[in-house]
Amino acid sequence: TVASQASNFIASETGANNAIAVSLTDPSGVTVPQVQGLQMTILLAHTLRAGANTLTLNGGTATAIKSHLNPANNIATAYASGGVIQVLFDGTQYLDLSQ
Image (cartoon, rainbow, N blue to C red):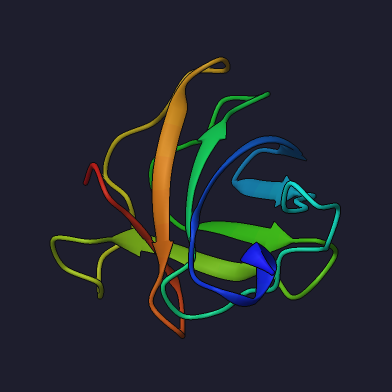
């Protein structure tokens, strides 16, 4: 199934402050696992602050979101509610593809 492969998904989120929570299934209804190479485009339901942020996929563990330009750094730019971010899971953390 699509869920067993690294794919690009479009998702909405819930959460607050510096935490994103995403519930995601593939087109066949299978829960998408957090696997290396997973890429998501996420429509934010709240403001995401600059600094340390996390993403929780399908009720799993809160995982750090870092800059793809330097994965040691937190994201530097805040996003407004209604904004869109793209992230890629590198096997350890999510990388913000725009920062």
